[in-house]
Image 1 (cartoon, helix red, strand yellow):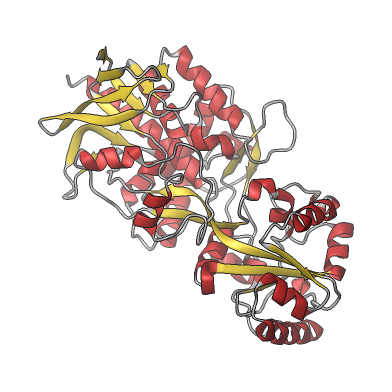
Image 2 (tube, helix red, strand yellow):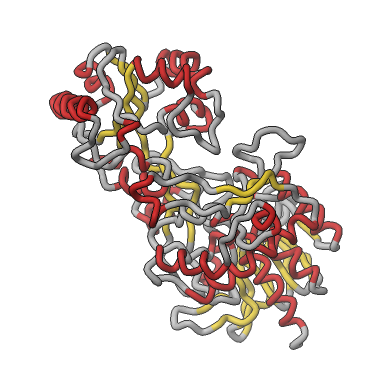
Length: 493
């Protein structure tokens, strides 16, 4: 068995792991990172950018939101059912973290909110300008994977600081002695076992979004049936299980909900095209929420979860499609291409011919309902009621913004089934505001830290979409906090 001695071990080199490794190294620690894949960044390579409050970019854009205000808004949103001290420390560090990234050479397009709430709910649900969107490598319009340029710069910074990153070497066990974490057992791609010893171990393995069995056990959702989350390869939950085996407290783990099409990255035009405030119904053909609220993907994911079969259907007619093609979508996505409807026909016909199951078309409402699997009588009655309200210019049921009250009357009609989706899992390991892992009875396990989505227990039951970029923000800042605290502990030995 090969043996390694170091100061700080970081398990996984995703966003939180890189932040922890860099932070510990900047504070004088010798750092070794074990990464089971052959590259860094993990799920962050799918993202667009982190939250920051009080950053130089916000100040330049005259965004006046303060860390204290963000902290209070977050705590009100979660009804104070999360660790206030951890949330406080995260927000008060987040602005400086953006500057820390900029010093590494990370460039940001700017700061924005993820969505603007309709006027009738704006007072308590509007998004804040916290999302720092990363400039893609080589420029261009930012979109999914824009944050890859950030993780690349962070990797370069880690290497510059002397951090050793050992790829294709998964960790299987945390070594504990006398109740303290003193190292890990890993195995490299040649099959050789490694015993690495250190003063601190930081877990940053990214949750269990690629583990259907664990998703079912921890959240009740069934992957591929009731939830279609991003399953980033390798996110199996090993870090969480290793922490539990080492005595860590078990917190409620959730899925970071949204909504999406199955295999949505291969049907991205349609995934974006149907995220419009047209007519949304459930399997019974009944409306279930004001459609002008769908830009808040978390709340919409919650609403779909509560429907029969945990599915919903987005419907528009030929007249609306013609309008979308001419004037663009009613709701412009920050994630999907802006020319969605220029390419709609091509992708629609391709997917229809290939039998892509979530979509359906019909020349009548009855035919559409039959093809989509919606209750026929229910949908016919709902369309009749909805069209009457459109003619009156007022939604008597949900008070949907009148500018989106467009009737469903001209065939052919288009329908797309919406499923509960998620970015991945969040939570599982109990930590304190220093990111130290604690036992079930809140006693610190010396030398053991957990960061990122493995320990993200600050959202309550729903992602705080009002403060966008929060997951990546927590990954970065919890990683920095752990790295700093682990390095500081070295002085005690």
